[in-house]
Length: 249
Image 1 (cartoon, rainbow, N blue to C red):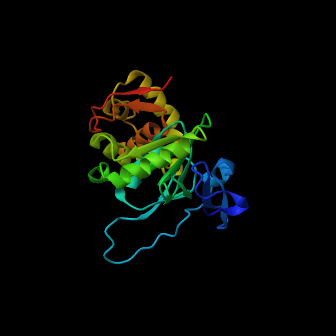
Image 2: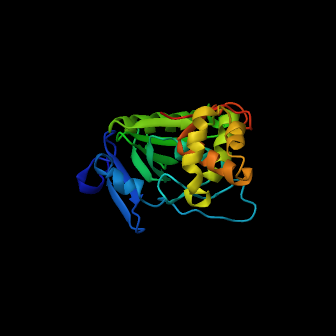
Image 3: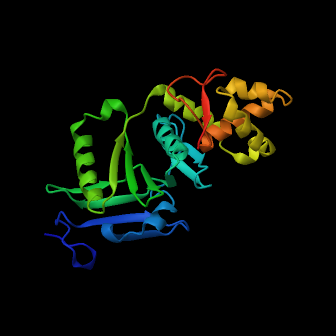
């Protein structure tokens, strides 16, 4: 029976090693129960991303307003989950491909790189695996999910498997993300838009109340405030001028 670093028994189901990449690019290996949350959250993807002609998945980098840093994604589905995390008010850190887990699952040595690592304002950590709906019932995928969930539970972390959300919500969040950058909207209008929103129940009403300003300038401010959480609306319906809106107390 083999042993790992430090004399640990590689076939002890309690022994899980982790490899992660710090922000300076250095790879670090450590026991799962000792990896620092802040280093993982601010680190780089543990594996390299490769782009090539004919690739089936759509990969890229997304600039998260939550952290001010780039987050990698390997598919449009992963990008959708990143957008929702970036939109969430309680998420403070987002990291992609955060680490590789290596450990004994009772029958074999298992290796797995989760897709996302989210840190919440209250200190809670959520580890996310994103899979297409067609793969969610695959027995190998389920076994991987079960093992990863058990590993995360040892540190009190939440483990989430995600295959999508309501299409209208995803599309609205994707649309609002285009207005996430404060430096690209007319910030001098923010106070006036918020004041107008106290009495005006719709996006169109806010624009009408500020009729002295072009809607091409006012609307991006409104949408930025929805993204930032200062205004709220129903994201389960398509956004339009009739969308009801209110100021967050």
